[in-house]
Image 1 (cartoon, rainbow, N blue to C red):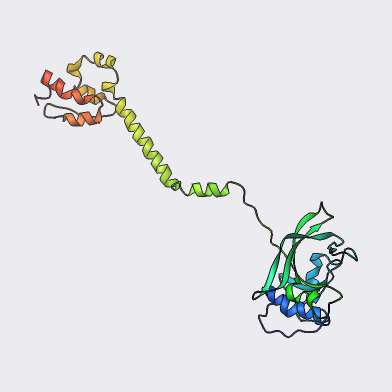
Image 2: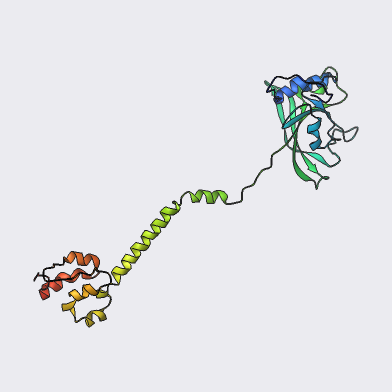
Length: 275
C-alpha cells in the first residue's frame, strides 16, 4: 500500500534493489524530464523538513533502504551551495563523489552524506547515511533540450549498523594462545618435570654418599657398600643382603652417583670378587 492508500500489486518476494546506473537512467532521468513521473517504488520528500528517523514512514517501500525524489534546496538564491540542515541537525558530505557510467558514458554522480545532530562544526555523528544521486555528463540538466527549473535528485537513506570495536591486543592474545598446548597436557608435562627433578634430588642426596663426614663415620671405604648402608638408604629398596646375593656394579652406579669406583674398591678389598 502506498502513501495514498492504494494497494500496490507486486509479485511475491519482490524487492526493490536498483543499481546506481538504473536509478539514474530509469528513474531520475524520467523525473527530470517529466515532473509528474511517479513510480511505485520511489516517493517524494523534503529532506530539509524531515528528520532521518521519520523518513521510513514516508517511503513507499523498503525494509533497510528508502528511496525518495528530492529537490535540492539552494542555500543562497544566486549560489550553488545546498542547504542540508534540518531542525535537529544537518547532513554532511563525506568522501569523494563517485562517477556512475552506462557502459563507458558518464551519466551521473553519487555523493555520500552522514547525518549529524546539532549544529556544525560541533555536531554529533549518527548512524544515518544518505546516498544522493544526480545527473551528470551528457544527460546532465544543463545538456537536456529543456533545462528544468528545479534540480531533482534521488536520495537513498539507510541506517548503518553499529560497529563493535575489539579491545586492543585481543588478536595477539588469541594468536599466542594457539601455540600453548592444552591445559591437561601442560599440567602433565609439569608434573613429569617435577617427578624427574625429585628423582634427581633423591639421587644426589643418597645417605651413603651425601658427604665425606658420613663416609668417615661409617668406618672408611671398607664398609662403603656394606649391607647396612643399603638397608638404611632412603632411596634404595630395603633388600636383605646375604652372601649369595651379587650386586652388579653397573646397577649401583645407575642408582647412586659416585658409585663408579665400586669396582676399584672391590678389587682392593676383594669384596666384589669374593662373590
